[in-house]
Image (cartoon, rainbow, N blue to C red; front, side):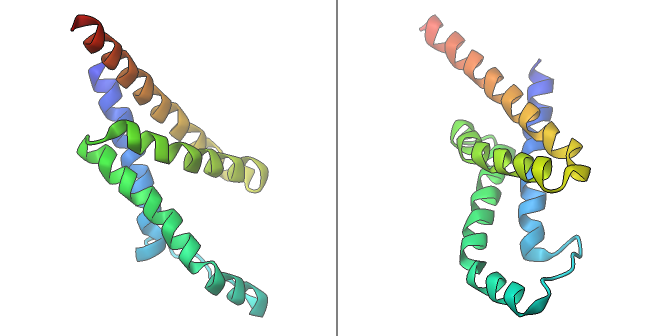
Length: 123
């Protein structure tokens, strides 16, 4: 069980870090916005997008470092929910991978809660 929780934590942390850093470093080359309206929207939302992606990268690094795990899972929870909803309603072809993320995150959260209950009951 310890190995499964470690794998889930690494999977969630690496995936969140990879796709968060992808916007800054452009690993996966995606076409940019087209048209004047799309370019204007991209420029106006740049600060919001940067803050959102930093809120995705920092908790991912916390998960990978095994530090402040409850805080990292709390921050990543709404982001993962948003990713799953976007894929479910707007791009269903890419739905299988985002459905794996909540399962690994919730598995690790349950494991951490059980550990906290055992440690508090023993003291």
